Image (cartoon, rainbow, N blue to C red; front, side):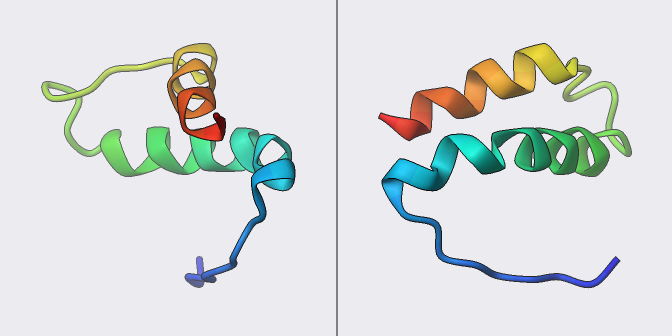
Length: 51
């Protein structure tokens, strides 16, 4: 997977939350003893940054 950096405006942030949540779970899956989350939890966590 290639890394792509993209600027997202505040009003667009919620549209990328599912992709960010999937990335977060994928990255942390290598360390399940540190983080074992679900898509629902990751999306709720990231929504806090939309404010």
